[in-house]
Amino acid sequence: NIISSFHVNQLNSKIPSDKEIEKVYKEQLARPGKQYHAKHILVKTEKEAKAILAEISKGNSFEKLAKEKSIDSSGQKGGDLGWFNLGRMVRPFAAAVAQLQPGTTTPAPVQTRFGWHIIRLVETRDTPPPSLAQVKPRIIRMLQRQRISEYVAGLRKQAKIKLEQ
Image 1 (cartoon, rainbow, N blue to C red):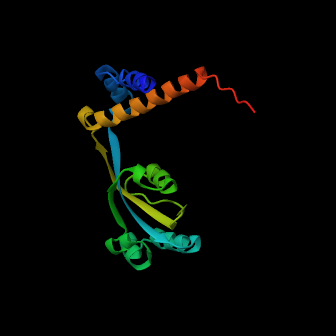
Image 2: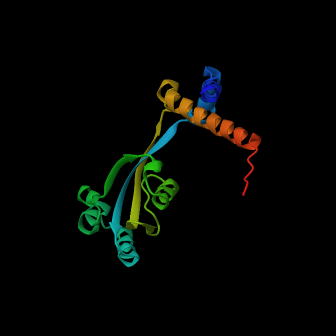
Image 3: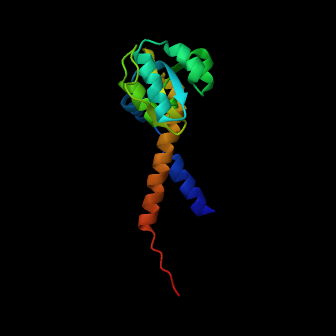
């Protein structure tokens, strides 16, 4: 019981200060973000995707093709995905969107676990960083987890465990 109380006191003494919280906020979270507005056409095969890209390059309507060919529910809205952060999308999709300029379409189909995508970036917008008040609880949890891990690692390093057979 005394040992447990000691460890609890050790961990409680490691509660992050406001200065530490602000430092993490400034280093990691106080940056403006970016949101993307894109449309896509999702099909099952690369062959289908390439055929649709060829139709788009001939001037056919992206939205019309999305309604006719896309297997994603967004197809009914002309492929419109609305606004999103890249972190919400699977990696290959996010990487492709990040490379596009507004008004441009991926030059080749993009494969994800869902199928093959043709993506058109409509526009981007900057988003303000979250306020310190919004992310303070998350920063505190992160710093506490980090300190607990360091404390446990220190205990393990000091422990002298001997197995007898």
